[in-house]
Image 1 (spheres, rainbow, N blue to C red):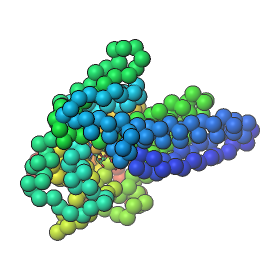
Image 2 (image 1 turned 60 degrees about the vertical axis):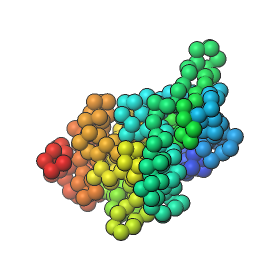
Image 3 (image 1 turned 90 degrees about the horizontal axis):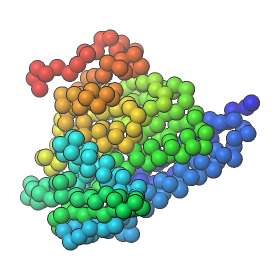
Length: 331
Ligand code: ADP
Ligand code: MG
């Protein structure tokens, strides 16, 4: 039976989303239907979650900050609950209430450095403990959520793509599709035969890989300081904010790629690990049983043990030449 491939690309969640599917000709109808469903699901998620849409659940939640709770639909409840959990697990390195800071910096649209006063003011509003969620005790899956203080706001930018990619993967599986690549703005899920995925060289133009990993039936997610940034006086101001300093994280890392079963978990964790830096990040990743590729500002590469056999450098360097663990000396 002849195999065909199809690619569907669409814009949602502030990024380009792409699914590529290999299938037998006879399954064409089913494949097209599944691809349409993925697009619809992602667009409806954008309608519920976007802070740029006045009618979204997130806008309602943020507008009511300090006033009261709003009703939250079942899937939004899930991502909010997960976001709060990841904020707790990472002790606020990933903090779901970072929006006052991300808005202040507006990296990608603005290249203004906010004043220390503005940063202090925005930083005071950060605190995931103030997001109070009441679960789906009523049986219909709906719940409520509220932010305790006026001016606080939630931004799902660091986690929504992961959740959407997981749901897209579920839709494809339900349609019997098992050869696919889901790529939602760098949040990737690979199904079927092993495939090679390039890992961007953080110091080179976009599209230049530093190396690649071979992966199958897993999610692969990267956060890097090369995605959105401006440079001023030799410092790179990027979109991954350290909620503790109120500034773009300067942790010594230039990118973090994580490999594991849940794209949503990896999406939250790549952001957190980037903020935490290599020492703490490396232990967190190992604790959670995940694999990862860490690239420092100096271009040094560190790999977790489980990924060493599946990583190769583009320039022919050997993996056996790189140090096994980040050095503590000088840290
Ligand atoms: P990208 O979306 O570029 O792939 P991430 O998944 O790491 O990268 O998400 C970055 C986005 O998450 C930022 O644009 C911002 O909206 C939000 N964000 C930045 N820093 C944090 C943080 N420390 N905790 C939670 N969200 C953050
Ligand atoms: Mg993320």
